[in-house]
Image 1 (cartoon, rainbow, N blue to C red):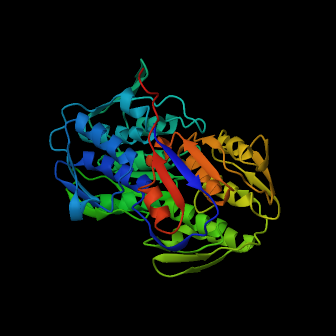
Image 2 (cartoon, rainbow, N blue to C red):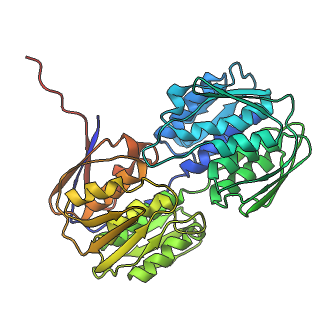
Image 3 (cartoon, rainbow, N blue to C red):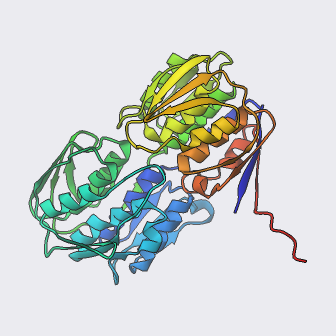
Length: 427
């Protein structure tokens, strides 16, 4: 099992280019199930979750070509012959976004068999909202032996009001409604940029969708969708991670190829903390400060402060003067990285959904364990300012969502390397 070895103390200087958004690429790949024609996606990040989705689609009979060479961030997906509309537990258990195929499969094939995702390290993420929405669209749902089986001769437009905001639920039902008879009105929808990006792709494929990116989305179903070419938006969570890395290390970092308007909540919070940032159309320059000030954070659905940046912000809070209170409102078990930071010398106390972080702490290198994708990124950030060497285990989590993170960090001055598992010598 690979590990990352990081020696802290270097300010990050230079330019980092941001990859395409994993959380936009995954639903876009699922959307290819809605048509017999090829869908070409550009700016696809080379991360583990993309490979998992490729395997998932291929197992259904799709032809998925991941680009190489100059076209390495492009994929072409053709779902002309779907022989098996099923998502097995073996694939769904490694990536919960696999459930995004449920809506498209029912809409296109009239049936779907998708494994329930099971437990999750950061808390419950049930798909009951997906199921309730599909039932509203006329699907018959049966749950048995750990699988959801859905069927419908033809989905029919309906009014859907989400009990709570759900990103994947909004995306799943948006795809299903695109091929339903009549009009669907969805309310209390997720407003994330990734939802709007999916709707942009679907409209290129011939769908009729209005209001994506707002709380109310209207979809006029069409009989058939066609192929399309689409460029995935930049990854706002990767951009936020590197912006915080620059701020944390007292560096001078230019984050290029990003979308600053997707980062409003973070940039506003950094101004409060005492970090200078300057945005252009597609970049953010961050100048670190050795005099960071504590500031509280509450995670919220977009456009609020993202839960996917909470762990990385906690690393920054350990280096700020004063007490920061971080309240996690999205997931109930998303502070596991805090205990690892405490091992490095951080002063953090967990009180239910709140983390009380007292700074400024001198962090020291230690052996730590990554528990999930964003937790692993936060430990990388903490290690960048820790004294001595930090060894981060289970970095397969970080490979799920960050493309070449160690190469990007090395390119701006970090001392970081990857090592494989050291096996004992055979006697």
